[in-house]
Length: 337
Ligand code: SF4
Image 1: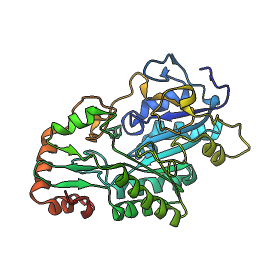
Image 2: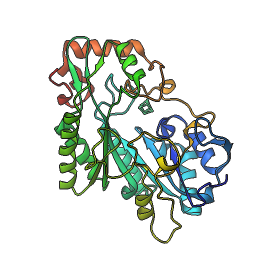
Image 3: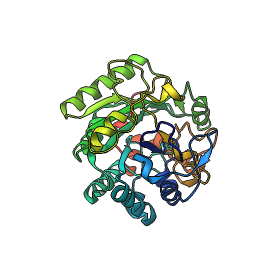
């Protein structure tokens, strides 16, 4: 496939489809140029030339397939060794994994363990990894309770575990039901309401998170929301950073902002990359067990296991602490309404 920027390419897989979890076999084929790939929802088809890749940025909430799926694991090693491709990771853990907010997503402790194994294998470097506490949100339940990860002790516990693995970059963003009204509609189907809390409250939380990251010698930036110039420091896909982490011995990827040549959210600071999640055969999360209720990429689809979600919401409403304890979740997720 020709590279329009005429520089080594950054591939993103994928911000809106967890390809590592859902389509690991297809992902391997696409990266090797063995299957047609699509660059975006309305973009043409083509084949990836592995020799033209600078970095692959993998987005996931369940990185297990990176070591357990033979085709994907071998492909990534081959790309790394033969073509000097840098494998970068955007690893997400919100604290909701395993709850009715994120059914199907592993608990954060197990994600930490898997990431540790990946780092130990040498496939991905901690320096090329971003920890995402993303999104943060507050949801009101039909029984008048509240569940939220806008809570500093929760952030501190999770971020400490990931930063202790050597990760130096941390980001977060606020769940967005204004730009994505289908999120509010999906939640309303469960009699749940996303709290439209003040921009200032979101900013204050991010200030605490930033101070904590500085204390831990990690670099924090907001991802798009809330928009604030002092904390919106870099993009999740950051060409300058990927060039640094890969090293000066290699040809550089472009550092031009994606929004200069394409269309991202207005506050997005990402540099130019190609998201291959739109390729034919790339499966959706809701069809495969993940069911994040706040997901904006699933359109108006319903998450899997509706009855189980409804039953869990009722459990939480009856005895929030018992529910959280039984699920092994942080007790502070239950918040004041
Ligand atoms: S369901 Fe949506 S938010 Fe959850 S992992 Fe998949 S793409 Fe991400």
